[in-house]
Length: 192
Image (cartoon, rainbow, N blue to C red; front, side):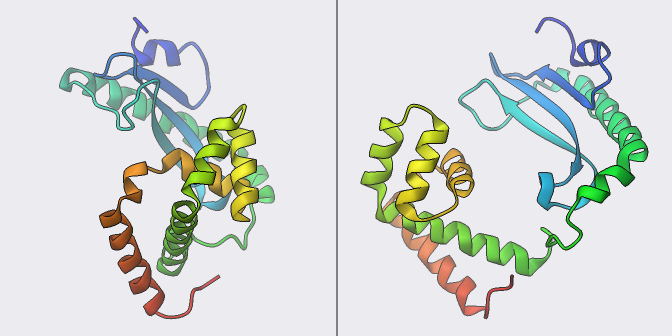
C-alpha cells in the first residue's frame, strides 16, 4: 500500500478502511455493516474485520501497527454510525423482522448441528466432492455441482467448503465431531 489506511480512507466517505498487516502481501479490511451477519443478523451498526491476500486466515499485526488499526476502527465506526442514523428506517423496512436471533443458544445449537451434519455428508462423499471441485471452472460451478450431489443449498456448501479444513476429515477429528453431534442431538429437539 505505501500509505496508511487512514490516508486512503480519507479519500472516500465509505464506512471502510484497509491497511497492511505484519504478513507480507496481506491486508486487513475493516467494513461497516448494517447487520451482524449480513441479512440474517441483528440490525444495527457493526464493524467486520477480514484478512485478505494471504494464505493465512488470521490477520497478524506488528505492535507498531496497533495505533493505525485503532484509527481505522474509530473512523469506520463513526462512519457506519452516521450512515445508520441516516438510513436506519429505510434499511429496517427491508430487514426481516422475524429473522432468528443468531445469538440465541437454540439457534447457535441448530446451526452447529447443521454444520456437523454437512461435514458428515462431505466426508461420506469426499472423493466425488473433490472430483467435482477440481473439474469445475469456478467456485460457483463447484458449489452448484457439490450442492446437487449432496442435495443441499449451494450457498451453504460454498460457505462450508471455503471455511472447511481437510484436516477436519481425519479419523480423530471426525470421531470428535461425531461425539459433539451426539451431545447436541441429546440436548433435545432442534429449534427452528
